[in-house]
Image (cartoon, rainbow, N blue to C red; front, side):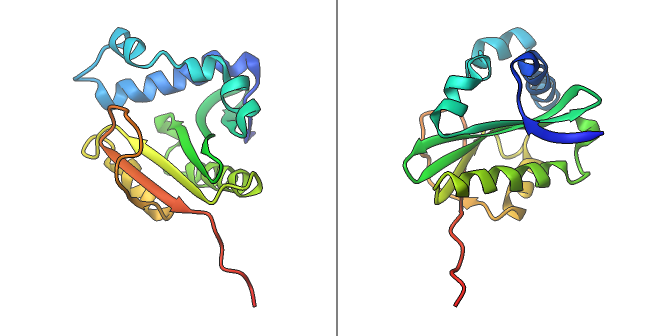
Length: 165
């Protein structure tokens, strides 16, 4: 059975492996695993409790037969704005609606936590075109740079819903 649930401590290494696998798939001709580890230590995943759960965020994993095959998280930026982080899925699990379902779960969490907006950043539009299109379908739109990362694409989505009359 495939399910989405909060990450458990024993799943941290598997989650990091998913991120590594997908990153190397995208950047295979540009970066080695060693370069990736230097650029992104994934300390936020190593310290998932303090970085996400204890800081008004969450970290979810897509699990298939006990194996982590996808990840997604929400982390606090400020009182009303959170950031969508670590949305990575192994190739075999893309295009099946799991990303959409996880995103909706993360948005529901963010709304319950009182966030009004969700932001995200992507390293490179050309290499992550599928991701850009996916986020646009979710309602994200381009915004100005909001952090000092090496990323070049910055997007935002409003979580505020129209009040029923």
